[in-house]
Length: 446
Image (cartoon, rainbow, N blue to C red; front, side, top):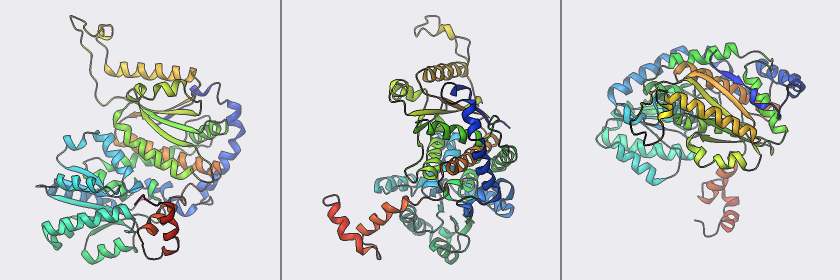
């Protein structure tokens, strides 16, 4: 198992006795997960998904990805939240932030905002290109993706005709119900399933994430194998060994000791969207009943030149979790310069990875000394197998974390409040009772 949790840098903050004190609580929580008796148990499909996924659909996903790569220059992935974050995170970590500059198939993400200029610019990037669309929505009525899909559906139909457009639209939606499923059946779109027992933020290893990832040219077999290996390996309830439960326990203990913010960091710039995926996963799972750690993120060393001062000397409200890849995908040796104009000859002959490792170690030591506890999660390298392990590690840790807090980690009731207000202000039928009250409160804003 390449993913490894290192808790050595909690000394002075969390002790072995602290871990021992919650061993029974963690075992109880793990037991309710494994037996399907925890709160939110209707959404535990992700737990055994790496072993029990639909093999026939998996083959169809790979076939659809091959078709997209053969007949398209651009794939528009329409979705919001868990319907796009996981796919984008994997694609950008494996293929870099510059994936679209380096690949023949460009993948653009739409339907994750309500910006006319964003939609218009995405449409412009489709000009003169062959385009396919993957719309990801369980219901088909979530505002942001529904709005974007209406526009891109019209675009494809005007350009290709209704029949040909249908061959270029792939719907990832409910198995049997919902407006998108109904439309897909009428129009003949190829459909893939958002499983009923897997919530959006846990869905990256379903068709939700796998179709875009496969279309990008990455090995989803290796991704699922890595996740399955993690599923089989991470069963121990021993908090002294490398498990998601130990990570969840460390987070819980620091929360109880007054650390209210978890800062996720990596020294890989291409990890930035993985940080966004992590923020949704933990923020939406834990942030309930006035509880939960606030998940934030930085990328080092870049953000040491903006946030480093606050982390080192600001309010002592956070701990850091560093995700580190032991083996770089590529490396360079710094050459000596006769003039030594930049004063770097002292590291001539060293690899860039040595410099990065030195920055990592130095920063960790400084932050710990400054009162910021550090956890380190190591993975072997940036490849599909390691990433599958890492995804499963975080998913299971998140479930344990939420249950330790006493909240349901698989729902998101707070998300609905702003939607009700928005629908009322836009005069959607059924929301009339609160329309006038909200207009008074928001006078002058719209």
